[in-house]
Length: 105
Image (cartoon, rainbow, N blue to C red; front, side, top):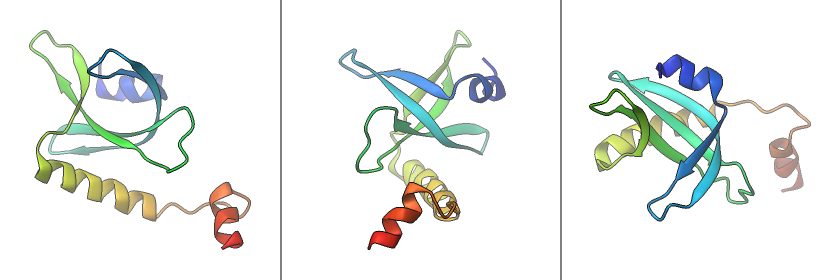
């Protein structure tokens, strides 16, 4: 699957953890760094703490694409910083839930 096709066709991702449990995630953002595509995904269900996961797209020896965790701490920190910077620059409309939270404080 081409990287562009992956992002265009799938706003919702079903991920399977090590125990075989499936969970759905929504795409928050993506970035390409040094030829590797990284995705920031948040749980599609309740997410009260606004957490998200960062995964990278890898292609196996059979040409199949998979999303995997980032094992290298330096790589993870670098990509997490990119997403954090991107999320900090998002401007919310005045009537968005995020704006309402700030008004209540």
